[in-house]
Length: 185
Image 1 (tube, rainbow, N blue to C red):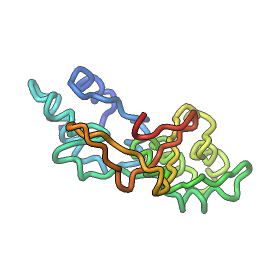
Image 2 (tube, one colour):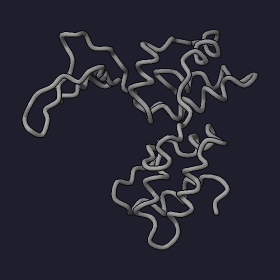
Image 3 (cartoon, rainbow, N blue to C red):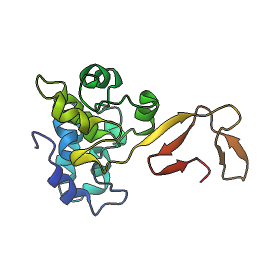
């Protein structure tokens, strides 16, 4: 039985299964959620037993399904970012922070970890730039989708299996640092 989630064990046990996706910043996810990965840890241990990987790796994934789908991993805290980092050199507020967090449910793990470290006494100067929207340092390559609420006239549409077009209620257009993406791209 595993005592804590092991990123290397997850990769070696689950990488050959259908639907496998590597964790985004796995070690930071584990560090940010020291008590919040109990279900995933259990299922990773079960997945390592002969013949269990196909079923249980899905439960151990970052975007877990089945019994671990309700185990919510910590997410980026916009208020904490503002209160912790606003006094640091080079600070810039997030553009639409809560929409950006919503648009990146698994894509801000590294920033979340560094924000947590920045909030500890004496760490803001070093770690706030790593938690910024335009991050510097080790996680500058973690590309964010910026959530931009849509206007009523520019809502994205989907096409159903029957060929019918429908508006996606409450959906956001996603603006990446590198360009604009919509649901109909």
